[in-house]
Length: 356
Image (cartoon, rainbow, N blue to C red):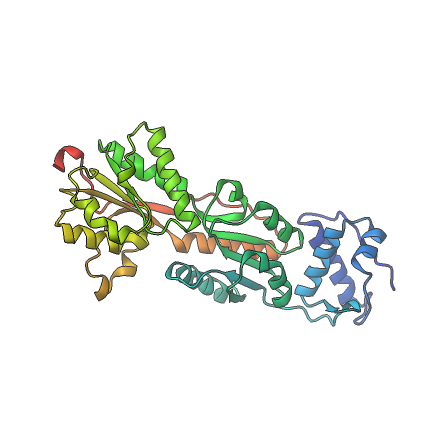
């Protein structure tokens, strides 16, 4: 078994990538010949003074770039110097309309940048095995809010950059691209409060989804911070279809409501129509992550456009893909800090003195 030689500190970028690049140069110039068996990961680490985690990342990088092949029960061998020319990126998401929008942006980006994009349906605990099974160079994962920092760091340490898309949680902000639910709610409540509203409701269907629960928590927190009263009857986060008619018909209804998800727009629009309420004369309405364009279909013709904080899916999808690709190439890019949503006033909010 040949003794490997390289410099452990040669420049910028992750250590594993520096070492892998040196070994690839030795493969390309013939110093390391195809078929040569590399030391086992622990022996490699002992021989070089590297950590086992770094060695594993080196091996993964060599394999993903086509310079090494693992043979079960035998070891890792130098492959013919025919590197994979196209980075392979996995996109893990649930099959619903929102993730389809993200996938569309990623597909366009990967097509333009000569990358392979693999849509995958996997749970988070399956990601490490998926990386190995599909020889992925990087991963983008739709964020459902149930990921641990430790698990993400472990995958990064293995040599494969992973970033979450959509919701940005504070504790995972350096591994995420998208928008902050807390910022969205802060802007929505402050906007209504700036008009003079104090009786503000919150409507959301399905609080069994983690991001939805987080939005409810952010709403309650923001109301408390602004010293605004919270009536439990004004906060509905489940069985919304059954409860809306009573909610809107009640003389004690709020002056304004925040719709917590664009997917809830059709329910609210139908409820308002059934109860004969006018927006904004009878009720001010703000919606987060507006899906108005998505609902421009005959079966959703009752849906109208509300004042909203519209999320720019294209922006954060492309930002994430660009950043990931640069990480795959061994660069050290600076992570952008962008708001990724905009305020759109559709005239559906008035001061409470005009909503009597």
